[in-house]
Image (cartoon, rainbow, N blue to C red):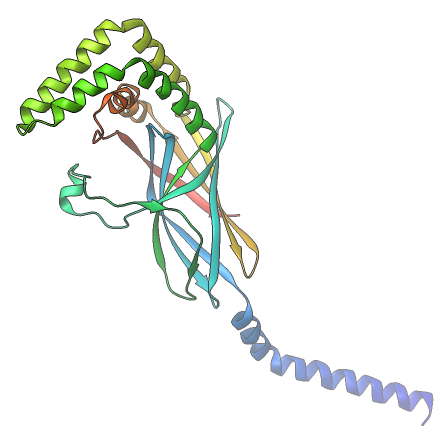
Length: 274
């Protein structure tokens, strides 16, 4: 076979290969999609922010769905930054809260709400799963707890009296007497209480601003990171809702263990996968 004939054979072989590849292209695409893996992440329209005895909190409702393969969800964290004030924080997932609330719970009766610690789990392939996740800054939680230890140290006798108030069968009278004990303590330790409230207010990272939030979900098998970017704005009314929480935190340490904290709902202005 001459060199010219060899070249012609080679050209014909390449032509046949290209034609065959064109015929198989749809099947190759299907095979690639079948074995590829991804994670769909869709947030609900609102997030909730709060400030409690655990420090600043952020609650996020999301729906996740692994594509083609089960995925082991190892961890989640949120990084947020306030644009004007350049505040940047990192929150870790801490609690998984109920995805559905009863009417009584929506009206404020949260006594029967169960939460559990956020731990790794397997999400089934091609099945959507709704998650209500509470994120907390563990470093700021320690700082808040440091303030509350001061409250505990000073308020020992008052906490005992409040506890004895709640032992009464008449719950209305119990709350009234407990509030009297609380007022007596606050009036008698005015400077200290104001100092504690000031410290707590300084630890609150929520201000009137636009916040960029990045949710990061880490998986194993396969080891990947999935991220979405959210944008929310805290307006004056959102800050006002949280204004009374430092006072509520102090009251909870004095013995009002079932006290509830205000949260502010923020509409997600836009989000995108990154």
